Every structure is written in C-alpha cells, then in structure tokens.
Length: 193
Image (cartoon, rainbow, N blue to C red; front, side, top):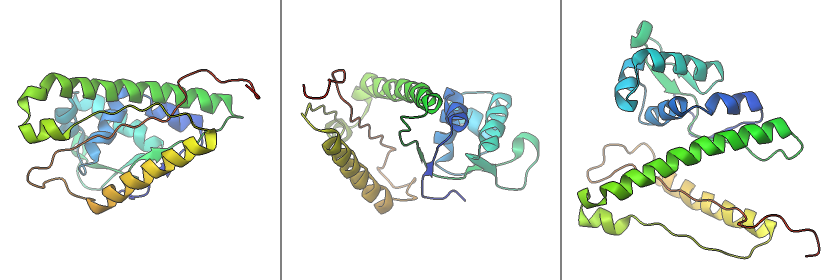
C-alpha cells in the first residue's frame, strides 16, 4: 500500500529515473490503485511490454512495487509513496541538473493537459466551465516571502488532499490538477541592487 506521505528525493539517479514521460504517466495512473502492465497500457495508450519495462525501472528506484499475485504482465503494481519532492541542493550541480530535466518533462505534461482542457472546454457542463480557471500574479517578494507563499499553498492543497483522500468514484467528481509555480520572472540581481 502506498504511503500517503511523499518521498523526499536526494539523489540525481532517482530523479533521472523519473524523467521519462511513460514513467510519469504510469505513476499518475497508479494513483487510482494497483494496475497490471496490460491495464496500465490501456490507460496510458502504451503497449504492455513498454509498461512492464518502465514499471520494473520504477521499482528499481523504489517508486513502485508488486502487490503480489499474478504472473508476467498480469502482475499488479502499486505506488510505494504518493508524490515526491526534491528540495534544492545548490551545492550539487548533478542533482540540480537532474531536477531541471525532470521539471521540463513535468512542465511539458502539465501544459499538454491544460491545452487538452482548453480545447475540450465546450464539452464540459456549464458548472465545470465556470469552476475551472487560471490565475497569474506578479508579486514583489524576498526569497523568504516566496518560500512562505509556497508553504502556504502546499498547506492548503494538503488540507484538501486529506479531506478528500481516497475519493475516486464520487458522483460529479473529476480528477482536478492544481498547477502552481513560485519563481522569479527576472534574472537574479546583484546584492544591493
């Protein structure tokens, strides 16, 4: 059973293991519960062979595990943790580069999902059209204030995740992605400027 607490990653190898779109798609699919490689392939539109290979790679780095039972591609897999984080390690350039590569893959996936929604807006009910929204703000903050804002956002999303944990079949409920970035929009300034 996947631990509800996210995993903290501190090595570049684990980050590189995640930096593949199929592996990220598999992790997302497994959020709903255990799947075989064949079931996962149907959900993410990949072959069972491809899914089996990537599930084994994810298991090698501790992101998934077999649930027991089944043989070959009929073996069910499950998450070992729900989510992960990779706190900054400014003194480790290899780790920093691995985070950048993973962030690029994640951003591409998130933007693709946003585009699919935007393209499909007319197919959603008026209630869903009104509920979905995007928002951008430019605030002038210090690094400490930026960290405070990011922690507050994480606190809010964790509160709602806990409130609705395990809910996948609620009538009228759809999986909703929240996307939030906290980052400077201009290059770094020299001290005193």
